[in-house]
Each structure stands twice: as C-alpha cells, then as structure tokens.
Image 1 (cartoon, rainbow, N blue to C red):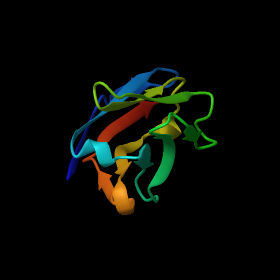
Image 2 (cartoon, rainbow, N blue to C red; image 1 turned 120 degrees about the horizontal axis):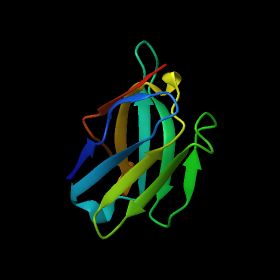
Image 3 (cartoon, rainbow, N blue to C red; image 1 turned 90 degrees about the vertical axis):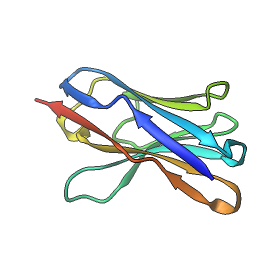
Length: 116
C-alpha cells in the first residue's frame, strides 16, 4: 500500500506563486510515475504534470512555462512549483501515484484558490 499526502495549497492573488508537496509513504518502491491532477467545480479531473522515476516530465499545455514538477527521492516527495498563477488555475489539486501492475493511488487533495 502507498499513502500520499498533499500540502501547500491556499489562497493567492493572480500572478503569485505556490508550491505543492506530495509526501509518499508505504510501498513507495513500487511507484513508477507521480503526477499532479486538478479538478475545478463542474469540470473533470485533468492532468497538470507528471514525472517518471527516471525524471522525465510531462505538462498540460495550459501550465507549460509556469509550473514545474520535481521529485526528491530521498524525501519520497514530489513537488509542484506554480508561478504566474491565474484565476483559472483555481481547483482542488490531487497527487497521483502509479505503481506495479498499474495500480493507482490518490491523495486527499489540496485546495488552490487564485483571486483576480
């Protein structure tokens, strides 16, 4: 089993920055890909960014150039640095891990609110 705990959300003005953290515990050796997803009210959950165990990254077009995903293997933590935030970035942000046999783990989510 893997447990994922997000932190770092909050309220920020447009143009500001936040850094989200996702701490993993449990059978973390099985995790191959970590990612951040977000879900705004009335919308489907969407991929924001992902990172493989080898460090390859992938970003949604809407956040390219503004968000950066990274991981600290020693701390079993994945980060999402969010800069130049926009009101449309407002959502609940979820951490996701994909492990052996494509088993999926989700965190509980953290709210990000960007005011205009």
